[in-house]
Image (tube, rainbow, N blue to C red; front, top):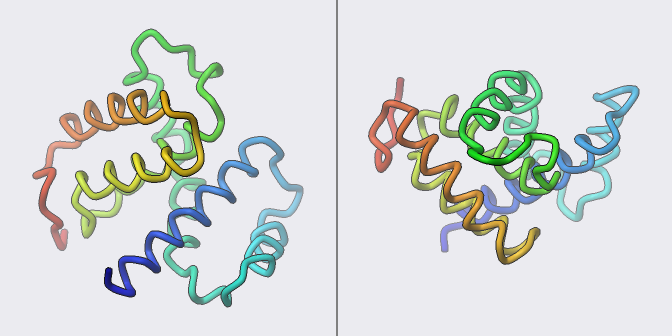
Length: 148
């Protein structure tokens, strides 16, 4: 496994943890909360630069991302989606919509791996179903990164 691949995986896990906590208890000062979060991790903050990009992207595009989740979560009330699953979905959908350098299938696979490590056994089917529909809706080649 390449070091960039493992660093991105660590960053996704860190971003997931922050977004999960953030969804439960929104901080009074986002910048301070983010600083404290990164100070608590074992590696220096710059190691998690990708995590910061993901967190920033999800937070800035939250309404758009949640709109997609609401549309794609057939037979599920948005408020009943487990917070950890919601954080995983938000990360993956942000990547699929706004990170053209990451093929959608990579975002889906990473989300499934996160669900295996942080959620329940049943979550991976739910997450995969929503992300598969998002992949079809995204309007780009699911297996290719682009520079656009």
